[in-house]
Length: 430
Image (tube, rainbow, N blue to C red):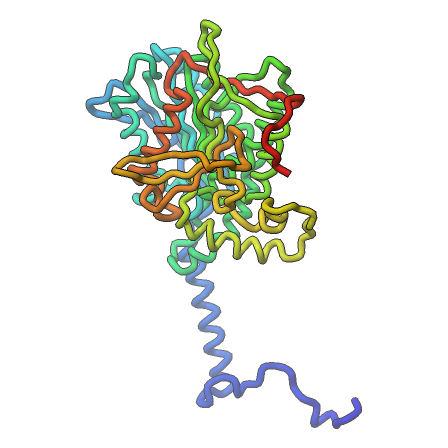
């Protein structure tokens, strides 16, 4: 090679002198081996196992003993592996049989609450501070609420917990680094088995018209629910005629969802193009405009997981993707929508909630682009202070306020949705 002899050729490998001076080459290799072995050992000993946690019927179907409550309750658990397939299809089949049985036994119908957890959680019954424990406690609270035990409300409660490996690490620092791996896993879960599960649960519940079904998801669970039910609702509406269609699910509730704003914008655009409206109907044929949404997303304005970490990771993940540049402000660009979570894009926010004089106040955003029945609500820290703060009593108060708008607990009220594509849209959204 011109310019220097073979003996003078520079070595571009990392020189051994980069290690502390007292280390010779043998000691450096020894220390590197120890570091690699330690890292491997930590990853093995600190890993949440990829396994089925509830393999017997008495484990995944649990009757809840709730003292001093007129309402009876059950907890069902359905688990999915990292590829979105069932660990045990019997969990779903037995849960559907349980819903049918309770539908026959109940005097006024059944309320089925379906919940999909998010990041850092799974279906481990030993995780005493996990979402499974908290969901069981929530069922106890709901069943004991005086407001739930009204003569026109369902008289049996079934909670269905959809478990997946949102937690892969037991080491706090390493756990923080699993966000994007688990997000990709959550996206895989929004597929055939999850769609079969959600639609089957809702349809089986509605075999008795008086029964109600509410589907919710937190964090990446919100992503799973949104990515699964969004296309299903779109298909259902496109297949409907001018008489409308009864909604299978009474409400879809997304809580601090890790859901990209581009997917949400596409659904909102469809609802606006279709001039979608929602009605409440009674068995006697009476109908009235629904004052509330049929999909609602609630995000804390101080949620750093979806507000800070999410766009940073999405920016890196989307850096080599092609995006259009023909948007007209104030509409955000495709890239911006793809790299931000829906609840942090002001353009999509339809409502805001705060606490005023000790009460939760929910108000529409004046002149909001999103004027559809898909409400995106941004809340203050006193309602939800961070990503995991969805058990906050103020958060619960807001959710109950939304339930009351469309009279979701009343067994003689059904939700219908209509498309009016020929009707001019009074709000320009281009």
